[in-house]
Image (cartoon, rainbow, N blue to C red; front, top):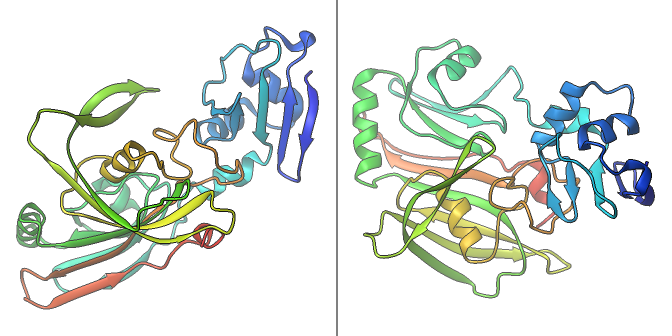
Length: 294
């Protein structure tokens, strides 16, 4: 067992001693709470419940070495619950051709998942990452789907996001224009990044809303003119301010381990309905997790 060096209600920290050297992280965590199953612990690790030497560690097979500093959120069940979508989804707006859903954290945006939750035959025109919450546009007919896809391609839909990032952003506003492309894979997921010398395909504008009282975090208002995979997450990391709770692009970022969701939220969408020509502007209520950083 390691020497216990820090403790709170949920977070415990240990320094690995010689008796635990060679133990896998999974076995070590099972020894801390024998009532938890390996499946629960693995799920919690996937959701960022553990840091080793300051970096998020998601691999249960990692072998511990002397002096490793292990910090763990022992409330595995709470973390899993926070990232499991509820059965009832809130509809923010609906008419004859368009439906706007308040997507919860943990919901995968594919036709099968959406239909399972809403029991409706809907068409995907807009995607959000699994860990991102907020306003998600869906079409109710194939005709509306094609029309909405055209709006997205022509950049005629205003999309605004709220993000809490690590660090005190000194500039009030800025813009990042780059060419985004896949760079590598990590734990079966594709990581994206900017490549030089290529035509711009991703534009993110950001405006600072506030800083936390300790100046360790900033809340940003982000607007994207394009919709590339992981665009906001990559661009904010590349300016030195990864999103709090981002397990792909912020593994080494310094934020409280109690944060068990990525703090990126699709706050507003605004556009003219291509079928009815009605102007639509919908906002999705901010999650409680954001309020601690405002």
